[in-house]
Length: 410
Image (cartoon, rainbow, N blue to C red; front, side, top):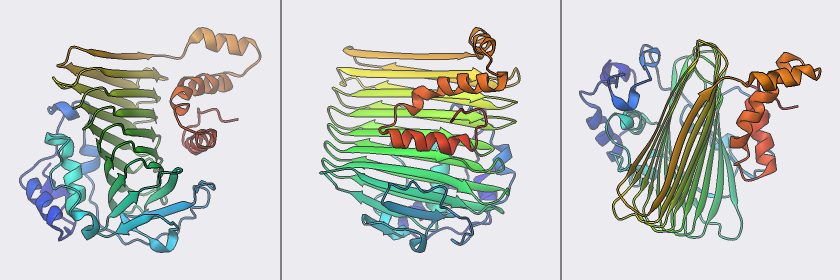
C-alpha cells in the first residue's frame, strides 16, 4: 500500500522539517515482509484502516494511572499537549516550531524502511514537546500519559528530550486508549545526553486490543553518559518498537530492556540498533517475551562495533516462552564487529513452561492456574528487576497486571 493512500485524510504541518519529511515520503510504499527490517511483520492489519487527526479533548479519568510520587506530569491527547491536565516545574516547550530546528527531517541513526513511520509522524504531527533536563543535584522525574481517543484517531507524538551535562532524569510514559475503538499511536522520541548525563525512559504500552502502536526512539550519547530504555508491551493489536542509539563519545553506557506479552492474534515486534561509534563503551540488551494463543513475537537486536571502537563490552539476550502451540517467536540477535579488542556475546532461547516445575508446584497444593502465573511472573521478573527503584518496579507490575492475566502480582 502506498503511504499517500494511508495519509490521504491527514493535514501536514507547515514546519520546515515537516515539509521535508512529507517530501521524503512521496512515492513511497509501506514495507512488506520482503524487506529485511519487516521480515516477520505484516502491516496490512494497520494500513487497511482509515485514520484522522482529532482534537485534544478526553473524558478518561487518569487518576489510576498517575504515579503519586512523581511531581511532574504531562498529558498528551491524540498527539496534542494538554496544559490543562498537566502540572510541572520543568523547562518544557510545546508546539511544532519549538522542536522543528532540533529534529532532522531525515534521521541520522536509522535508515531505509525503518524510518517510514518517523517521517509520517514528523510530517503530520499537530504538536510537539521539547524537554530540557538539567538537574545535576538530584533526579528529575517526569510522567507523560499519552491518550488515544480512538474512533479512527491517529496520534503522532513528537518528543525531543535533552539531558544536559551531569543531569539525571527519569521519564515514565504510559500509553492508554479510550473505549474499545480503533486508534493508531505513532510516537517519535529524539534523545540527547551531554557528558556524564544519565537519562532513563520507561514505556508502558497498554492500549486496547483494537489499537496499533509504533514507537521510534532515537538517541545520541556524548562521553561518559548513560541512556536506559525499557519497553513494556502488553496492549494493542500490533506493536512495533524501534530503538536506535549511537554512542558518540568515550565511556558511554547503553541499556535497552523489554518485556512483551501477546495473546489471541496480537503481534509485538521489537527492533534495537546500538551503534558503538566510540571506544571504551558498554551496551546491554535484555528482552523477554511470553506468547499465548495465536500471538507472534519478534525480536531483532543489532549491535555494530566500528573499526576504531576498541575496548567494547556488548551483551545481548532474548528469551521467550510459548504458552500455545499456535504462538510464534522470531528471534534474531546480530553482532557486527570490526574491532579486535572487544567482549561481545548474544543469545536467544525459546521454549515452553517447565513441566517439572509446574508439577512440583501442583504437588504442593497450588492450583494449575496459580502455578502458571507464578512461573510466568518468575520468568519475566528479571526484566522488571532492572528498574531503578522498588516503587517503580511495583508500579510497573501493577499496571501490566491489568493487561496480563497470567502476571502474578499478589
